Image 1 (cartoon, helix red, strand yellow):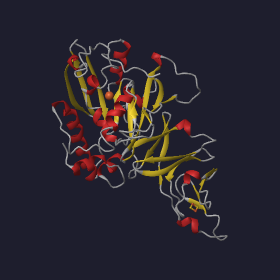
Image 2: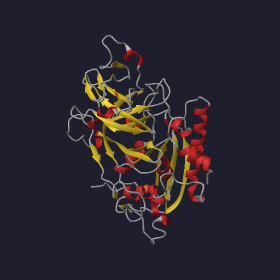
Image 3: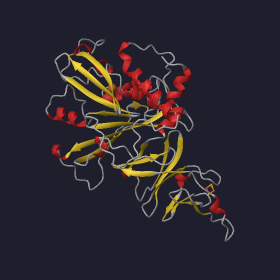
Image 4: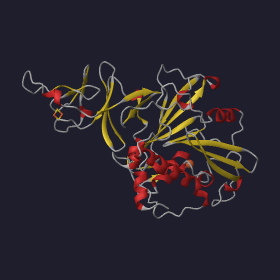
Amino acid sequence: MLTAEENEMFTRVGPGTPAGELLRRYWHPIAIASDITEEKPVKFVRILGEDLVLFKDKQGRVGLLEDRCSHRGASLSYGRVEERGISCCYHGWLYDTKGNCLECPAEPKGSNFHLTVKQKAYPAQEFAGLYWAYMGPQPAPVISKYDVWARTDGWHWIRALPTLDCNWLQAMENSVDTTHLHILHQELVTNGFTVRGTTRGTIDDLEKYEFYQVPYGIMKRRCFTDGTMEEHPIIFPNLLRQANRTQIRVPIDDEHTWVVYLHFVPFSEGPKPTNGDAVPVDYRKPFKVPANGAHPVARYTMTEVDGQDFMAWETQGPIANRARERLATSDHGVVMLRDMLRNEIEKVRRGEDPLNVMRDPDHPIIDTALEASLRAEKAGSVTYHIPRHA
Ligand code: FES
Ligand SMILES: [Fe+2]
């Protein structure tokens, strides 16, 4: 159980909030790169509670600016893109990708007023088929080289999930919640397990489980009654590395999260599908009807693993009230994650870099035990497979 104050501290993501400041120390994916095209060069993006506009100018440079124009506040996501940048469609104030104002066309001839205007701008870059943003203090770190992201002996593909209508921490706590797999997903994650009844699901196949700290997060280990074992980690602060992918949970704002999976397939397991250079993208349909509804109006798809998870996370509420929870022994992974979060928030308060902020562009690849997961899957010895969705 947390106090109401701690719950606020862990969940709020806006500027100046403790978790918001922590999360601003990392690069986050904000859009699918192939969604920004010559025909559609502008996209509204909300991230960490800030409204921004992502655009590519006609020189191919990418910018990420505050959406609200410095002049009188119209949205730049309706702006016109040209060689020099994006021009607000209201009075034509023209901004480059760094937020410099290059022109205020309605000002008197010869006016240098535009030189006094600066639109808030954040660094953005393309990597692995995604655009990434950094919204923290300068100098910006580098995108951390986790094996799934940084290995070059294979190819990436992306799965973009529908917007998750709840706070980011609910998804992360679920990733250190080993037992739910055997109850919530009992009908779907069945490989090698026996359902012993609706209440127990397949929990009796789980002999023991533990969590231990690794340099980049928390490793989960599960030991099954048939003598097999499985491990995979969460990567602090907002990634789950499971099988050949990272599940990235990007806070949109306090009550919404973008979930995007970035997969790595070694060439030894198959060639990249031929679609030019573009990273393949699988856009998932909403897991509920109506798609923008909230519990109890919305009904969730319970015939897919991701749909079941979305149900469990969203029905906890837009921000789970941890002041009324009853944690049990089986929740010790959740407690460990919260302790880690508390420590890392403290580090940021002291002016230190939190866990997994990397500054050396040549830092060694961070081994998240991906290879072991790939080998296990190849050998057919993994204890379960999350079914691939059609
Ligand atoms: S509001 Fe953008 S130019 Fe006037
Ligand atoms: Fe799950």
